[in-house]
Length: 203
Image 1 (cartoon, one colour):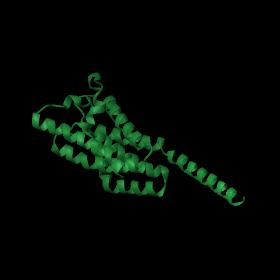
Image 2: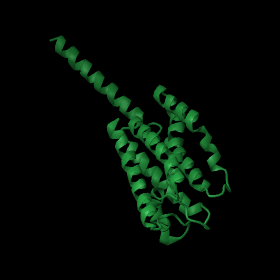
Image 3: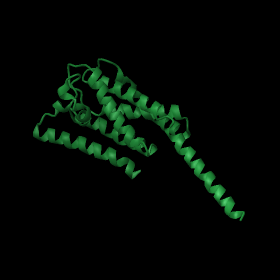
Image 4: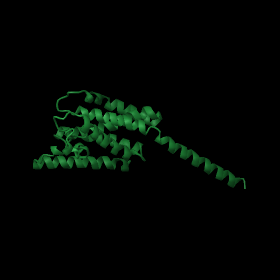
């Protein structure tokens, strides 16, 4: 669990560091956001989730990053980091390609929606007890996030929320069977060990 929470902690520390620099020095980091279809802001695919407009924006994203990020990495030990990175990049790319072009899009809410979406749909696709339990928890505590994808909300990048939700769904579908290979290997190893033991006993 300590390893699982390390990346979310480092990510939130970077978010807070950049905002504190902005707050005390008045440096404007908005140019690190995503201005859709503007080639000069392609870097925003990597940097936009780290930039926040105010304290409320930053604080509201901090706890979900820590909770959902830790659950994602803990429940998917072998591919959790890959899912996190893919969600991060796919969400940013979709925003750059399809979001409104009249403003800069900043904040980590897109990848939060992506992680919540992955954990939710992962439960439906895998249908094992742990995944279903996690999906139920996400639906219970973060079900209200669905309102965040409604268009034309003032000051909210609903496109980021929608892009993250779509990214999480696609990744949950792509990786729906990855754990079956691990189960097969475990069963195969158990069978080999049992045969070896029986062979040894029968000598």
